[in-house]
Image (cartoon, rainbow, N blue to C red; front, side, top):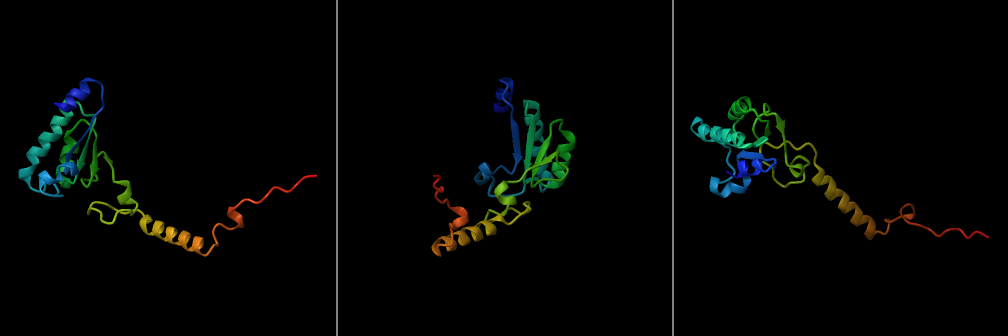
Length: 149
């Protein structure tokens, strides 16, 4: 009802089904959805319902790949996967996770960088140079203008 209400008023809605972190306590924890065929019907119904209600796209999160493939093939709207399937129409990851800034990441996350370690190293180097008074150096400070006669 909420998606249809918003759609009727011209507000674009991207729906979200499968593992919805905001409902993790209701779902019994961070559990992959649709890992048994018995779970498929409810998730397929959710996908069809959000499309019918007017969502322009749907995020499929933490979902078994075969189910995400099936939903992607059946829906007329684009699917965006996060821990779902490479066959989704698009992909998304949490930036902090993919950049290596999170202490722990879900199995479906690929860390494309380890910036957390680099940032910590940079902060340590900065503190060390400030304490030793090697930063700021002459290169990073301003002198006086020369007096013109």
